[in-house]
Length: 209
Ligand code: DC
Image (cartoon, rainbow, N blue to C red; front, side):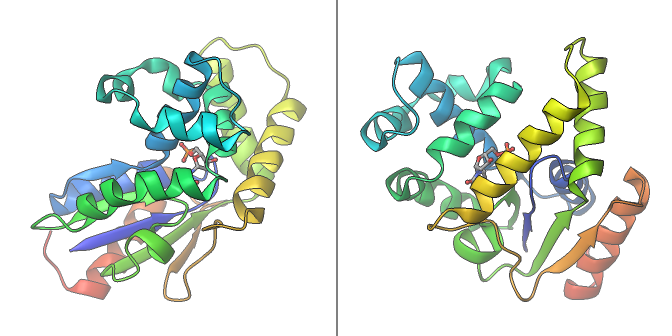
């Protein structure tokens, strides 16, 4: 069984992906991490994330980079969003994601183009979202919790900029697949959102959990 989860930044799609993977006993891939690795490696190479040759050269990052805590930084998310607009970068990361999706037994993947490009044949697709203000509020609280001093307006501006870049790019933009369940969790807590996602997948593929 393949489960495809897409959605904008800070929508909670990673939480939903991990919960579904645990519930159904499937491996999970956070595809954003691959783009984050390319963005971060570009910076390590002193390259320019907006220049395709620099971003492409960073696509052969070492696998060990995927464990680097710096990939989780907010600044790395912006680098990832910038390198991800290059079709050549998307092509370089394509097969790795497709192979993960098609492994025997299935998988859960979360990202921006899973249900549309990477696994259009997925058994269940979810588009996880929340209002920009709510996503910024959650990210702001999480950053303050980590001791990062930043104002709410700066976080909201970053969320809106990421949304604009991820939905506005020409190649594989963030888009809800027509057959994806829309899970807007603006007014749902974590457990309710997870329960809704599990119920949707079970309804789609039958109870296997
Ligand atoms: O999910 P995330 O915030 O870790 O993703 C970081 C950036 O990577 C995101 O802004 C756009 C890009 N990305 C993408 O283009 N396609 C994906 N499948 C996953 C992420």
